[in-house]
Image (cartoon, rainbow, N blue to C red; front, side, top):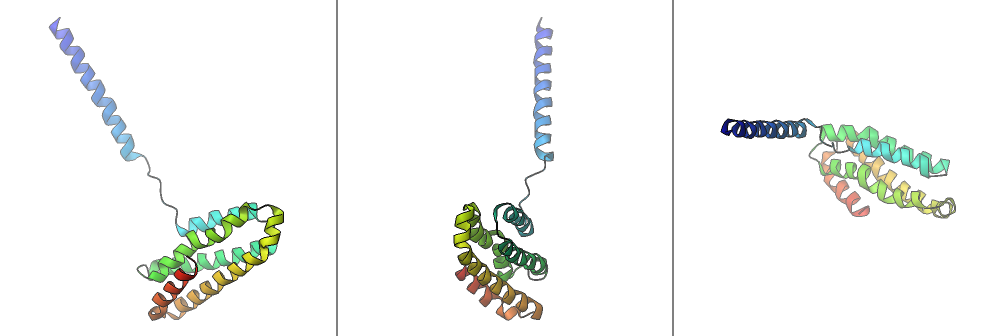
Length: 157
């Protein structure tokens, strides 16, 4: 009788360890949620604007900015990874554009029409700063990076 009791306890322990270790192994091997890159964020934004913005001119203007960011971000993130300007350009892709566009995309067609000029003005300001950033990168004027980064950060808080 004692041997049967001992056998049941040993089997219970083995059973418990088997399932415990199996669960731990699944936790270790399950892929972790990867963080979206700025390029991913731009892709999601581009999809959303095509779904939620009704004006073709506005979509073209936004996509022009997205394309410029998609061109300059890999260079900044590769060549100037530690630069504050790189951080700000990534923020432009992940935060600044969304702050301008997300509320607008929630408006009705009529409200979007009424607010279109304000949005275009904001987009022109973002594009100008982006063009200046691209020019600094092309000319490799790293001495100007921090100044430009601080200006953009303060402008689009």
